[in-house]
Image (cartoon, rainbow, N blue to C red; front, side):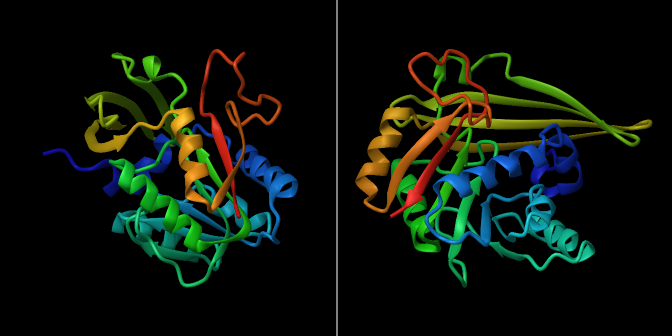
Length: 258
């Protein structure tokens, strides 16, 4: 059996280091400035993994709170915070049913890490976020709403390679429909790691529920705890999503706690 990608945070971090974290944090800061209706100090990431936004958010003056179900990710993030003198909080919990000690002012999910398998779990997640988020705070979702399902289930998957120091990681993400009525699919992440003459294969499979734009808006309206603010393509606030948008990449969606 292959080792899970999520049990090797140091490799997972390298594999997903293609993102411009500083640029993403600047977008978060702009969204907070433009749309938050509370003083934002505490920012929480659900499915935080190796907490790649933590150090940049901390430098920007925010407290960081991470929630992840995987103990290896929590341990790695805690050690990273300790190494850099960051006073962060971490909770090893299921993102659907999590609870934190002190409310936060902003919650975000990065890179499609929305681990819900049913409509009921999606509603439970909304309830958990609402219970942890101060009124006027923001809920940001990255690549969690599927605008192009026909490309989402591309048979070739998505591949990329990242090299850092003496390590090269070739990654593949594949989406396969499981139940089209329930809108569930299996997401498989494969990482082939090359370190000199040593080669390691990591693989993880997760069941998720696809979420489409109009049902997402209906869910927000029925929740009575959030209002829809907007959605933009590729973390670019000059590209609001509209009927004219054709190609989608990492669309972000913003809600506000009411």
